[in-house]
Image 1 (cartoon, one colour):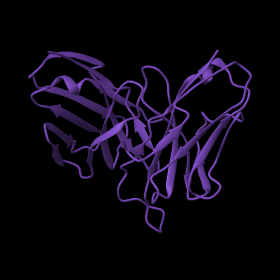
Image 2 (tube, chains in turn blue, red):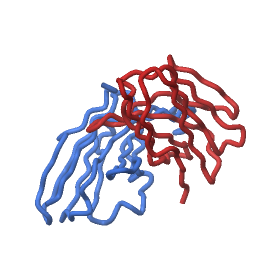
Image 3 (tube, rainbow over the protein chains, first blue to last red):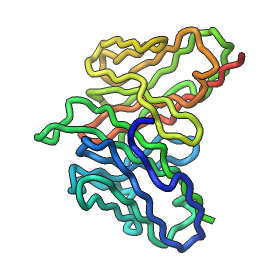
Length: 119
Length: 109
């Protein structure tokens, strides 16, 4: 247990439905990441937050995807109008950075992931 | 975009054997990390490397940061059944990690 939790662990939905995942990072970690992992691949970066600010988004994050971190603690990732191609493991990771926002250490701690299956 | 080439893709070894896997990149990274992922779980950090040429150990695991900063390798000595899993290398950019496709390790008792 890395201290990063994700909920739910598994989600099965029908194409066209909306889904929302939650990530609770390690409490003192001010930076939070979302990654997507498909079968046989490594995790791919989606987006990250520094406190409550969303600073970067990957081109993988289509306009059907939205992420929030309203109070700089937990984060949610919503997928609207799900498609079969959205089926993947969605991973959350967190890290502490100094007040400058830079991190001398890139040791991201990952949660257990949410496995999404779109039928 | 940046890509990491990780090899081999899979390995079958006998318990007690040593294992070596490596990762190469077309770009320079300032940090290399090695993660292990069990089925249905998130990646767990094994070793982090911060200086070119650095050799770091964690128990039976040893990893090195290549001097060109474009490669890294991971060795596992005296493998045991619980070493089974997928090992990922990752290079750290300015804010994100770029992962290889993983090396799937199977240990035959």
